[in-house]
Amino acid sequence: MAYKITSECISCNVCLSACPTGAVKVVEDRVWIDPNLCTNCVGSVYTVAQCKAVCPTSNGCVKQPADYWEGWFTTYNRLIAKLTKKQNYWDKWYESYSQKFSEQLSRRQGAVHT
Image 1 (cartoon, helix red, strand yellow):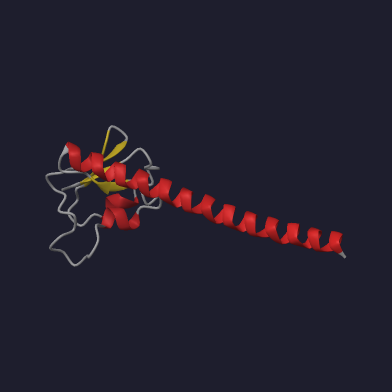
Image 2: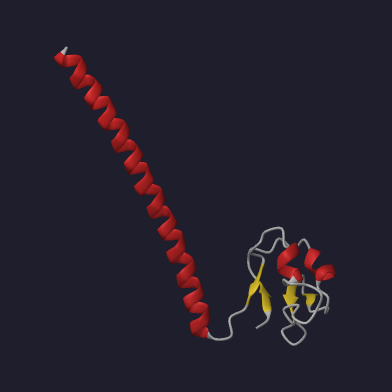
């Protein structure tokens, strides 16, 4: 599975010099990764793909899925993870808000009874 350049690429061209196989190329003013030359840096001295490692946007260079469904599930899982994190945020917010509200309410009730 080769890597591909996404729309988040800022055309900094850092990946051109970082690629050990020379798979990253500029074609018609756009950065492109030749899937025939891309080896994912497997079998080299690197433990991660160098185009991904040097990318300042972190998402300008991503693994290209081998088939449609693999890509679909990758996108689905990423979106579900984002939704889950937001849900946790709102749950924490509600718990914090309700706790503070309960404390204020009990203080006011205590002040009224004394």
